[in-house]
Image (tube, rainbow, N blue to C red; front, side, top):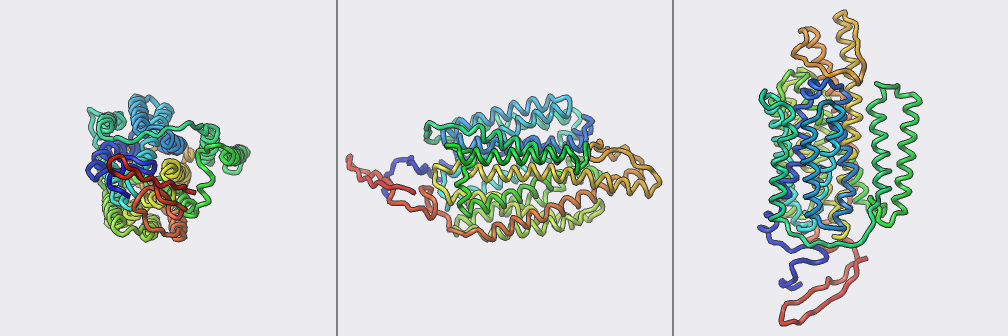
Amino acid sequence: MSQATAPTRATGVDMTHRQILQALSGLLLGMFVAILSSTVVSNALPRIITELHGSQSAYTWVVTSALLATTATTPIWGKLADLTSKKLLVQISLGIYVLGSVLAGAAQGTSELIACRVLQGIGAGGLTALAQVIMATMIAPRERGRYSGYLGAVMAVGTIGGPLIGGVIVDTSWLGWRWCFYVGVPFAIAALVVLQKTLHLPVIKRKAQIDWWGATLITAAVSLLLIWVSLAGGQFAWASWQSAVMVVGALVLGALAIRVETRAAEPMIPPRLFRNRTITLAVVASIAVGVGMFGASVFLGQYFQISRGQSPTMSGLMTLPMILGLLVSSTLSGRIITRTGRWKRFLVIGTALLTAGFALMGTLRADTSFTLLSVYMALVGIGLGMTMQNLVLAVQNTVGTHELGVASSTVAFFRSLGGAIGVSVLGAVLAHKVTGYTAEGLGRLGIAASGSGSGGVLPDVHTLPGPIRDVVESAYGHGAGDIFLAAAPFALIALIAVSFIKEVPLRQHSSSPVGAEVEQESTIAAGAGAAVVRTGEQR
């Protein structure tokens, strides 16, 4: 193809390395904001829930509500990205995030806080989905590994900085926990300004219908399932009529969603995508990684503060081995993939390390050596760094440009779905285990246990008498080990799934999916008005 090809094509955008970095600057800043929205509260949550007199269930739902909103809206953002201005969409998502953050900072109770976190999740869903879509629009798959490394590095910085910033804010008396939500606002505004100046993409609009029924049914099915998991065992028994109604209702809604998606003109999650083995296996792996990543790691801050009596700031510092592992592995693997075009080995090694890391974390107790714990966390971080972005990369390599949005958002959707399920399920497991271990410990002291499973208020260990404090710390430490052990099989499922993915070297251009029957692209030769056009059809 002539080097004088027009700067934009139906199949992608021609940009220099410098132009891509300039455009990515605002995008990565927006991605940092999305990550900050979840990580900044991770170490602050025990203090927030304690001050708002919330329960373990509320602790879980402050996280789950944002993840659920992100999950439900990710396919919508992805579909809209295929229909209208990606730049406008990412700016709208930043605006929604700012609104949700301001309202969350003013919340007066856990219910209000959970509702505001939903708004934050909607904005974060747009930022997460659109970052992947815009990168795929600008950058060919072969080069995308290097830039995905940058994205992984930003994720690591956001994950490192978030807990530390949140911990410092909570530990600073003249700020208070409400600034954990306000702190992201300046970054979001800065991202809006930078994106306006640096992100210039062709706007390809076409008339289409949004599959609102599909989105509604999918959201309703997932929400009902998560509500059941959160309440069962506390508000009512697992084997009860309430459980039966919720489970059957979720299954019916799920079946209706599948029916609607198969008949919709432009479904939110096109069923035809799952005819592709790579996409199907990547989705299975994404769900499993999401369960382990969100479901287990979100409780690390709670472990450090309750089981080890650390401050929110120290809790953030103590997770550095995991975050540094993620930073190094995502950056290095991205560069190697760009150089070689081979990506499967990193998925296999990454999920194997993730499985081993979670299994070793299953030995966690209140008095576990921090040196050993650091090694275990580093394994988890390295595994995540090799896995998360490369699953998206593998899927993007199999579809055409016109489906980048929906394909990328489908993977992100199922990863967030796995995370929401993981947080909810493992939170319920933690509450149940802690109740049992606490009762056993108090029984050994000759004290009758009282309180209710998941509805029990989170304790402030610094105010408890010595012997009881030891029991509570031990109970939460043992419970944390149990949920990591429960997450290990999900990582193993991800390992099995990626092992069956067929590796196809990354394409040098974003014009067409690998394996598609494609004739020569239309090209416009430079010259004094002379044009040579080759027409082709992609099936």
